[in-house]
Length: 186
Ligand SMILES: NC(=O)c1ccc[n+]([C@@H]2O[C@H](COP(=O)([O-])OP(=O)(O)OC[C@H]3O[C@@H](n4cnc5c(N)ncnc54)[C@H](OP(=O)(O)O)[C@@H]3O)[C@@H](O)[C@H]2O)c1
Image (cartoon, rainbow, N blue to C red; front, side, top):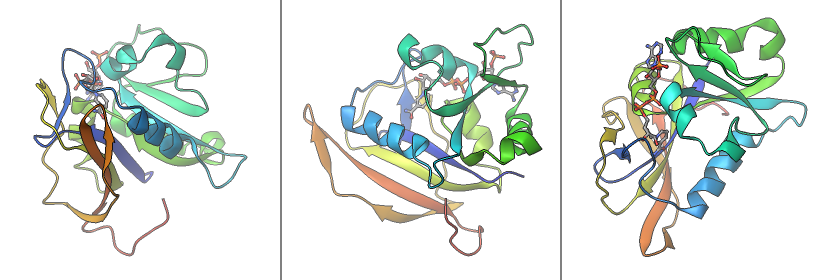
């Protein structure tokens, strides 16, 4: 299976969303997300972002598809129409298979699962999920959508200094799968 990483922003209760949106607006976190998911070591390659259909729907028009990245949307709706170049998959396994196909594998460097809750829930269980890049929002928000518990299978490898925006403090933490063997480049 294609190895992949998760990227997420969550509050202290693992809240990630409310009413189909992300409850906070933090420029530093958006910049971090863009840099993490876009930057490649090989300038001839792109990274891929896999997301659930609801997360796709939640992206503002100017950022849909997310530029500079291979976008893959997971849906059960075979009729769903997506812009040219955006890939559609009937599940997470199929999304990873599509990215493993010869033509794409050569041009795709790192795969990120970017949400939402339904897709994270499936992704954390897969051994192919190597790292979780988490923005820890240090303030509780009312949320109706949550990241699944993950402490049993992942351990923290780093945490950044705290950042503050509009009185909201946050930091960037990284977690590695416990049974993923030797640390690997991501
Ligand atoms: N804080 C963060 O980092 C972050 C990141 C991303 C999203 N979010 C938030 O999370 C919320 C959205 O999450 P969500 O859990 O409601 O939705 P989601 O995971 O983004 O998308 C759910 C949709 O994915 C498809 N899907 C899920 N499992 C599937 C399967 N096994 N096979 C085929 N298709 C499948 C279905 O699409 P169809 O209905 O089309 O079949 C389902 O309705 C929003 O509030 C969003 O803002 C937060």
